Length: 346
Ligand code: KG4
Ligand code: ZN
Image 1: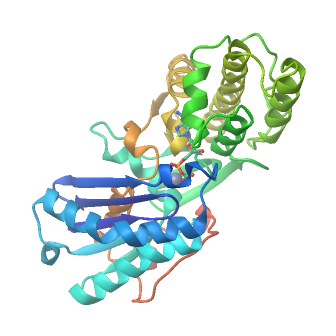
Image 2: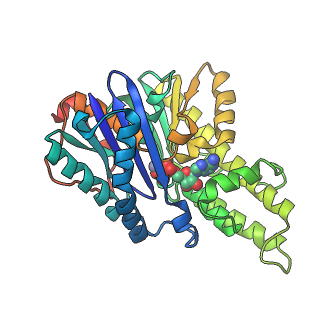
């Protein structure tokens, strides 16, 4: 089945064509990063309008790259939540209108299920069952995954998501939006141990996270070291970035090992924007190898938001016979464990 995937949940317009026989045929991404940079974060109304401007040219481009016309498409998948309401509506409206015009099935996909299954697009995909660490700008969750649609949330962040903590800390250090990757780049140049960052909630049992304390710790460090300036000297900034990143990574590694033990599993999947973090990948690889376990992740461009993960996920559900009615579905808040196995929802 040839499926067009559409992702518009936040500040990225992602399009892809996935074929159940031949795999991923084409994908295209337009990032709105420059548009939102002046505001230090995503402005929802601007995001929706930019999706409107970019989506149809991208549909044409991705079909052309896949070597097909719109009449070849056999199904359409779009992100129907969670995300920004206006942004979700753009993808939903285009998908639904196209599906109606072409008389083909349309399906709304859960954005985090898309992230979770993104590593399936790689040559060496993970096998079910596995534990997934979902780490994005809006979510930090550990999930026991038995199969598609069989998700049990084992633990999650009680306050900021890991990506959000990266972004907010970067903002305090006056790094440009989006701060996560910029903070990570500085962290690689700093000293890990100069500052004694806490590893929040690791000294008690359980799989929940809390990252907001790291922000306060950073704010106090900046205050202490800035002298008469707004910010500390560059070396201190690098050392704060290194200490912060190490604290987040160590905390995630500790909880992942604990989750694997608790679930009795040997396979870990990391997904979402923060899974692009090289330090996280490295420390997980080292830690899990010692225990005979293995970590899987998607290529860099499929860790952050993209259309390929939506096309793939939608394809699995469409092939199983699932589809939506022809009304646009947009669900800004949508718990992952409300999803069902594809065949149950036909
Ligand atoms: O999955 P994603 O693209 O969007 C959401 O669904 O939220 O994740 C974006 C998040 C942002 O918070 C961004 O700063 C973070 O992922 N991120 C990173 C890195 N690359 C992206 N955080 C740390 N290190 C990175 N290399
Ligand atoms: Zn995302």
